[in-house]
Image (cartoon, rainbow, N blue to C red; front, side):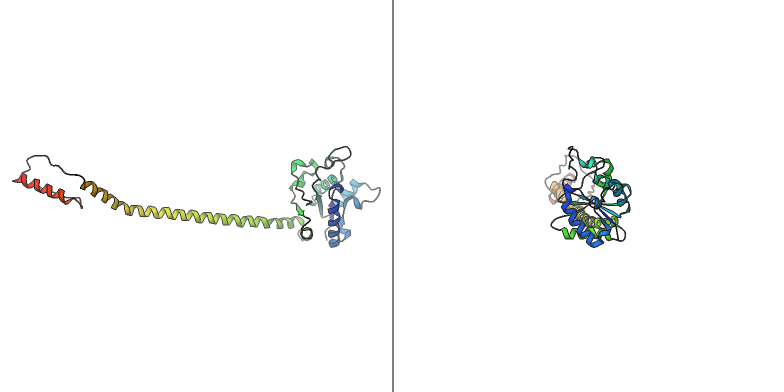
Length: 256
């Protein structure tokens, strides 16, 4: 049974902290859930007590609301950056001792980035957050309890939960690549068919062109002595009949 530390700021998330404490302690038992200063004995050193509690817990739930980063003290200074601030001490102690820290976002809060955090708690920005909404409060609390009760620890549970959107993204990427490959193959097949068909039509086009050129041209033979024996070799398979007759007539006249 894990020991759980709930860290929250009263001015920001006290209402959520009470509801989460009730749900978590009902499941794990009140002896396994520590809710920061609410459980401190009068006169105790809060820094020493917090560090001891954090050192013995298995997980720290850091509740983050919309004003978690910006709440100021009586001197108009941001409380998160002040030395001795409860929330800073709790989270810094957990990070220092390598305790599992789970940021829990409530009230529509967003996970702070590293540059927004004080140096002592900047590693918090690297932790995977879980969001608890008002609409799905019971379901989200169930996810949190499931993460805390996994045999291999909360970190592994969150890694398991994160594989769901990663798996969906991978499937989408594979489908997109397959569709792209299919379109590319289809286009190449069209180009290949076009290249194969073009040479088959080329000779006919060339023959038609040559025939037309021959039909439109006339062969002129200059006047000369053409007596003797002549051998005509006709290489054109489709020579115009009129041209052949004209050549034969001129050859006969020259011979006589």
